[in-house]
Amino acid sequence: MRSDHQLLRWAGLLLLAFAPLLAMGCADPDRPVASGGDATAAGRGGSEGVEGHVTAPGQKPLAGVSVQPRSLDQPAAAIPEMAVVSEDDGQFHWSLRPGEYEISFALDGYQPETRRVTVRPREVTRLDVELLPAR
Image 1 (cartoon, rainbow, N blue to C red):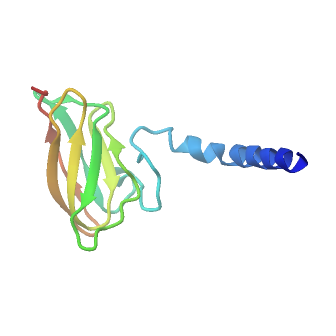
Image 2 (cartoon, helix red, strand yellow):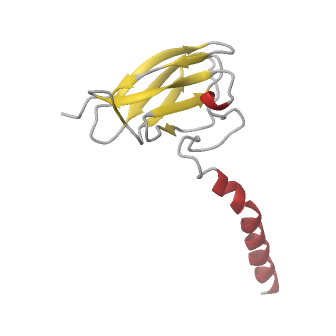
């Protein structure tokens, strides 16, 4: 019984120790859904990646659009995050290693869109996308 109590105590202490690190990942809606070593936002200090603006027809900014890359390189480039989400003004930023990618955009109520991009060393590739309403 004593060992169970000690185990729970240590688990609680570990949770308290890591809670601030977990909370930091949730503070910015433009941060990657899962954080990783190469995942600083491209427009915020990264040296290469993809950034752009997601809109609906009429240039209406779309917030909350899921932006997901898939490496087309062989072997595939590691992408530690699952997705980023566009900000209130429709902007998104993502650092990606140089290579070929397929970038998918999805938001409930809109038709999904996929675009192919090339990320070059020390460059940020611009990718603006308009999502059409679902039929």
